[in-house]
Image (cartoon, rainbow, N blue to C red; front, side, top):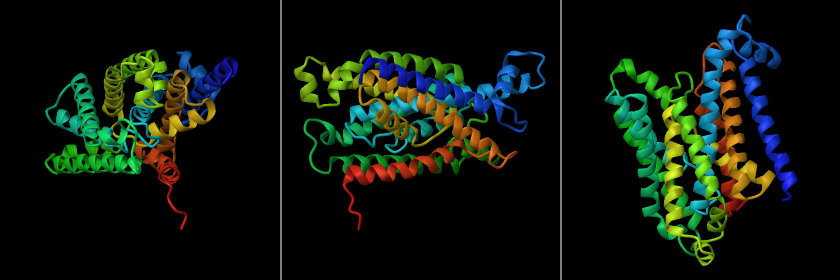
Length: 333
């Protein structure tokens, strides 16, 4: 793709993200126009200044960070596993992070420790998946590799779900409802936003430094090795980056599904498969998507709020089934 067109598309994605942020800031119990919300953000005398600045904008920032982190993790997993359906939620990576977070919260850990626990849980789940399916993505993938990889991920997700259910059965009743709501994906009481933002910037910058090598890895390990890529070190870095991104997202909002599938695919349709532009474009689209989904979660049955993870799943699950049909070659009968 010509460089000018690529730059124009990235600017369009950035503009889309900005429009989504302003649109979300304008909607709530007191609805206003995006321009009025923008004035309220910077005008301390505006009647809605406190609502926009202290209530809506932190939630919008949290949603954007979560969406961008999950999108970057999805991109990395799709390259690492060479599978277009790889995504933190589907493969159980988010489930491992959520289980680790639940354990940390049960010991009343502080926000930083919860983030570290989430990253460790995501990393452990991803490493377990790689150990279970190393033959499915190393070398020349055998026939049916995509299906077996997905099945292994689904089984890991089910395992983490069972462990989370067992843990919830031991939680005192007063703490049970908010914990369940958080596990479904919730931005209402989002914390760790600053830490998640720093992790997003660091992971995206480091992944972009490896973008050329990731492009070669996407064509196969032998191809990358023949062109001088240190495949083992690159894969280790991709695992660490994906685990950090997934864990940081879960520490902020719980388990939010299918963003890591939807954002990279739509960005890929617009920009191709060059990781140098796909990674930032996916981050922008993923952030905008979660912000919009959270806006719907806030206003659709206001004043009651829905978990944002339920909204993203409603939109992402049909896309996953469509892509699975194409990748696995399902029969139309």
